[in-house]
Image (cartoon, rainbow, N blue to C red):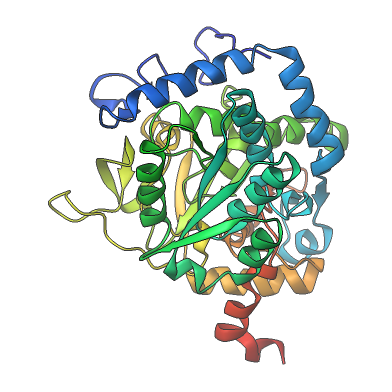
Length: 400
């Protein structure tokens, strides 16, 4: 299970300095102060050692199967496919995982890593709260105290995940703002607490964090490959996923990076579309695309309804994939997302989180006019219970 280099493979990387790409086009890195560098290098070594340890990996896979419930199903959305016409649409049903999203797989992996490093407590940031509740569950399972940090903007939207996290025994600290501010505050707490483990929820921040999260979530793409070969006797023609920072989409994409015939499509929120509207900057430990002011000094506040994709930047590997044109990126509006939520709920009987509806919206556009044997896979990365109050607020009359 150790990471072996494959010649000329896009699945290699980052380099020893944490960069994807080279020179001016390098994305990622260790863009942090002296206080955090020893902590990050220690984390990197612990990760490298862990993925070479068969006992550690076997334990991870055991709990993936028996506690999370993996593999998650690859479900043919037959009613939606028939209604739209064109390509076959498949849902990778990450919402059926224990705790209700893709986040729990990364949380399990990193909780086991924290225990291996003999850390005494865990720190997490969260936007939609799915990462907070998933991390709280894994920490409860393995008896680690946990503190979550969330922005007030997000707390006001997603109280069900917060309630679940507290039921698992987690504590919550609320900061002004949203996910951007939550990450910044959590990094500060981590820098001053050598006994803490920062369990980051996505492929962002300084190296080696993006790679750790990508490694854990790459199980999504491995399952898609196996399941699609079983169901369709071929791999997908396209994979379309939503992204805020990018763990869900990279988890699905990574397995197929070297399969050039597979189109990879990422869908952001309209105001947080860093890959469509942003510019390169350095913040929160990484060099990447972000939504920022004209002078590049202050990251602007984004305002997308789904909290999990309402993030001003994106993980460095997505920036690299954009630059080399291996993946393409677009965005969906709040109105499109809400329309798609209703369509999926009333054709497939699935109450999805709002975030993946950005990707399903784009999937529908791309499915139209395609041959009937063309296969598009999109990841339903979370359940919709957390969003019901917001959906009712903005679209309640649509369901009366």
